[in-house]
Image (cartoon, rainbow, N blue to C red; front, top):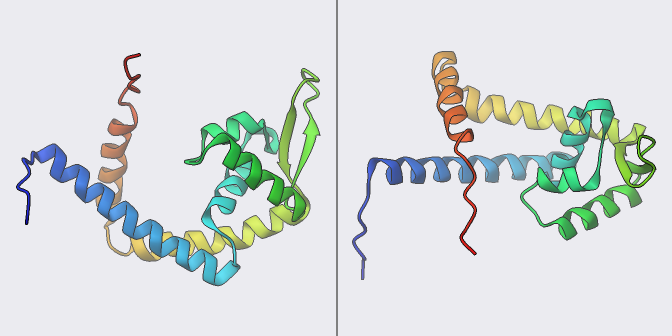
Length: 154
């Protein structure tokens, strides 16, 4: 039995966005795993650290930027540390917490994985859209990025 749902332009747009994102993420994740053996979550942490000011981040800041729980982030960072890709150092500015940063090996692995990821993005996104379309899509998505966060009522 099919349930008829009320749709709006916004809900149809949302569905198209989620469908495209899900499909592209699946393709890029499969390519990353096949070519580097690395899960996309691991690459995401390496990417965040590579782009961080000073090349280091607090664990809590890492967790905020990832679509996984804080405990999941901690476990992932622990495994990256065991694999020699990241290291923990004391935060010199306040002496309380730790900072996570890429090791030399982590930087090399990140560069290799980054080439795979960028090639995939160029192939699966860049080949489907013109430069003008990509610019327009960035502009439109930037508008959605500015939607205020909703705090559920208590």
